[in-house]
Amino acid sequence: MNTIHINGAAQAFAAGTTVAQLVTAMTGRALLASGLAADGGRLGVAVARNQDIVPRSQWHATAVEHNDELEIVTAVQGG
Amino acid sequence: MTETLTRNDALVIDGVALNSRLIMGTGGAPSLAGLGAALIASGTELTTVAMRRYSVDEAAGGGTNLFKLLLENNIRILPNTAGCFTAREAVMTAELAREALETDWVKLEVIADEHTLLPDALELADATEQLVNRGFKVFAYTNDDPVMALRLEQLGAAAVMPLGAPIGTGLGILNPHNIELIVSRASVPVVLDAGIGTASDAALAMELGCDAVLLATAVTRAQNPLVMAEAFKHAVIGGRLAAQGGRIPKRAHALASSAMDGRPDL
Image (cartoon, each protein chain N blue to C red):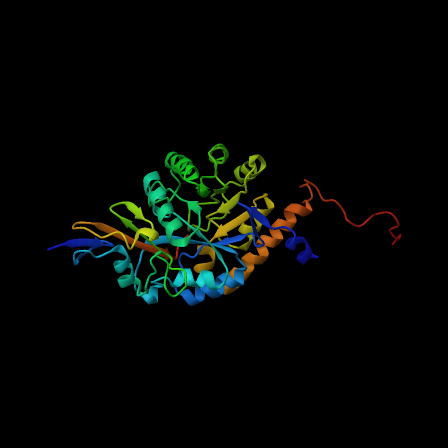
């Protein structure tokens, strides 16, 4: 089975799944080809794949692969 | 009068004018609604956030609710690198923040251990250099060490942020002399960060010549955060004005303010 880790949790994925699809699944917000939110608001989310930033402009073009480690982060309360 | 003085006294960092010299943190607030009200009461125009895994837990301010709250209130965001122990982690966190929040400002925190939360000077210097080279505007959280503060400035920090006391202790400014020394030699803004317990601590920081004060816990964990936020707003303005007004020298003996001349013979 193909598995990726998102924020530390293992999950199965279909071949060809893109970072953009995963971001939409997590945030509930559709994305334009640019990676910006389709609703016009700012998204406030960044993605690292295997310790490298995936710029939002590349989210649609980036398909995840078996054993990928993804971190999807945002702003939370802090210092 | 106060209005006139403070209106013309913006703190300019990286070409951005901040009319409030109170920078707020958001850590420790029990609810997002309460936090929002306290931020507004504080008058802050710049507020820190941490970068963490996206969580859908709405009650804990999950999703992008905090981000939205700050945007809606026109509060500029200063992402931090809290929880980073190495330069490598801090640089990665700053890059994630830049991508997510669309700002190249970063409050650089590289701590040595969880017990003291004190900055690790070597990792801090390394991270500052790397981030400056990557185009970040680095607000470097540092020990109250005048030598280190100057080093960070030389490495290209946009502001240096010496601690008053360790994070969350509320002990106030433990070494006012060092803070004064840092201010006297710095040519970038000096922001007193961490250790603030109450309004007089913030006023003292400004009287010592700091350009701004950053605090979180002192408001978010106060018995009444809303009232405390307003207290800090006034304390920072009062301290700034006192620094500009020029305090009287301290004297060992009393000095009458009423003249003895013309005293009636009673």
